Image (tube, rainbow, N blue to C red; front, side, top):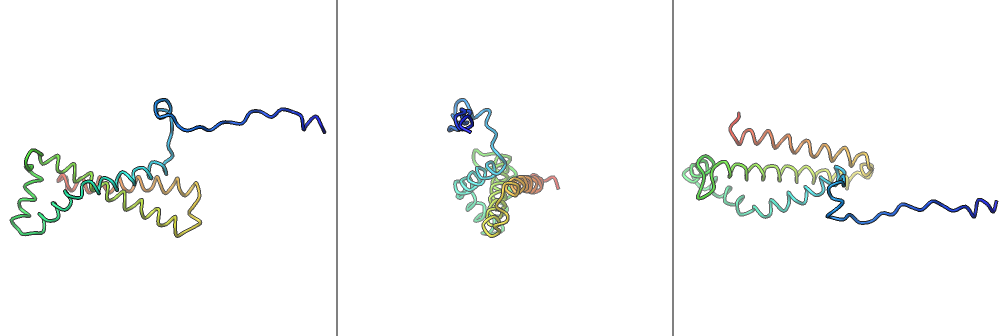
Length: 148
């Protein structure tokens, strides 16, 4: 009995913080972590591009002439920015809104349903959030660029 109590235990694994210079290239973030980071990025993107959103809304609803100017800006450009660049910015905003909205619904569902707070649901809902937001962005981006 005393032999079992005196046997040395193997050393425990040590968990340390991630070093940004050496560990980031090999660190594998789970899908829920990716969705969490992208949720913050999309919120910041929408906040920073709020003047562009307000300009788009104001120009598109003021009058028929301003709406024609709005459409022309996306076709021929405005100032130093070509039309395709404005479309890419609008596409980034579309993705940011869709991702932020879908990830927000995911978080609300996890807050309401306590059964949804487990590792498997977090993994599956994160993959669904990424897939749905990218799929809807591709569909609306095809419409934005005139593919249908």
